[in-house]
Each structure stands twice: as C-alpha cells, then as structure tokens.
Image 1 (cartoon, one colour):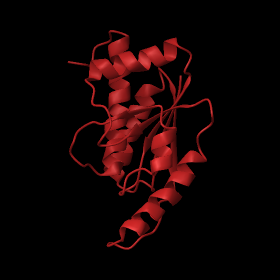
Image 2: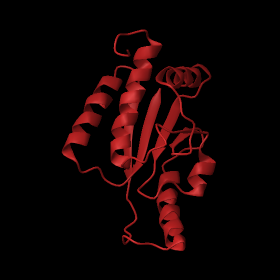
Image 3: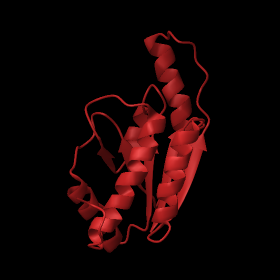
Length: 159
C-alpha cells in the first residue's frame, strides 16, 4: 500500500520530526509512506472571515495539486468520524482488500481544510473533539497507522 501524509506547513520541531521518523521507519515494513508538505499561506494573527476562507482556499489548492484521481483521500477534521483503533485498522485493511492501493491522509493548516479539499475527501477522521496543533496530529496519525498494521497482523503492540 502507498500512503501519503499531506500536511500544510513545514515541520520545525525536532522532537516531532524524530517521532514521525521513528513511526515511518517502523511502517516501512508494511507500506510505502510518503510525507508531503505544502507551503502554508502567510497570514496575520487576526483575519476577517473572508481572509480566512482565502487562506484555506490557497492552501487547499496546494493540497489538491498533490492528489491523483485514483487516490483514496481521508481528511483529518474535528467534525470527522471518530473511530477506535480497531475500527481504523479494519477500515485500512478493507481499503487494501478492495484495491485502494493509494491512500492520502490530509492535515490542514491552523485554519483547517478548505471546502474543496473536504469535498474531494472520500472519508474523514477525527481523533478527538479537541483542537490539536496540526504538526502534532501528524505524529499521532503515524502512530495510529502503525498500530493499525500491527492490529491487522495480530502482532504485539496494541493493548
């Protein structure tokens, strides 16, 4: 399976980079994982509603440019569907079983994802109703993908 993790903005925090590198290394035994970072749109601290939409639209265009038509897209969003780790593992397994060999997880910038990206998404996922830094979500996502593969293969890790 080919998994892309598309994020807005460049990851700068060393500790997050190290954690993500560890999980992508572990995942390499199960799938090909590609990290794609698209530039975030520079914006002042306080934006009008129209300016926020414009920022999300520009970031969304950059995300959409990285998606091929045959990619199954899963958007991370607070309003997305919440799952247990076991449910997530089953869904990934079913995608592979039914020929979805390209999966892209999309994590938006600090303002979230554009409507166009959400419309392109085949599915959504939410890890919590809480708001997390999008850089931290990349680490959490990598860990959960790794956990899913371990669950699906009945290998020790998930407790």
